[in-house]
Length: 298
Image (cartoon, rainbow, N blue to C red):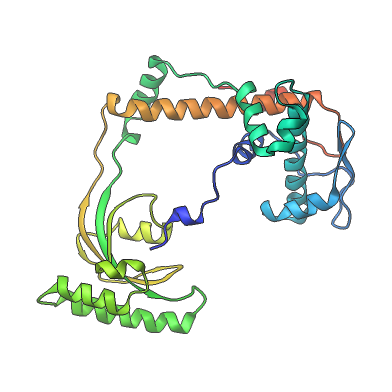
């Protein structure tokens, strides 16, 4: 079955930059912007190509065209600031940028953004204030039969749900459920798992698409009385085993806590670095609305 990982974009410095900039309070107004025109934006005299802003819009869904244009321009201004910082860096410079832009940005950030390593007291304090957050993930083993259908195939889905209910009824009254489930999976399922009788193995939260996960983790052991619908179609599901999460001790949770605090510190340090670059630059025709007090400091 396709997992949520199939739908995720690869991690990149751009994602971290976008998250950091989102913390900064900003206006959604381009100076002299309108639905018909994009102003000429300059960063230290370098013009941001209006065509590039228009193309960038596809990566910034928003409630209005003006907001989408602002977010697109904002992202390109940040990238230009980082490019200029790379070019000005004596260890990086033009050669690093021409060789690999993303690697150059990563190396620049590595040099200038240093997270604080959390100490024992910080980790212990976070654990003591939220002990219920630190539990092992629930674990289930399950198998399924996928009756494939596109999400917008309404009539087809109705028929597939009827077929799924018939299969469920047969399985619930079967004298040999294992054999019947394997046979039905091999006969009807459109998931590659059909070759293994529909077996999905062990599943933890975050491994499958949300609509499947939300439903299957709420099920008791046994054949689900109703089919589960996802973007891929209609699923007949049997939960074979389930193991609920259990509380972790501080020592067990400490690596997780330390990693969380380190990532949080890095995020805040990156925000500060980007803020500093923007304050030192001459940026024309976009109002970033950033000030020292609007940047969270951890």
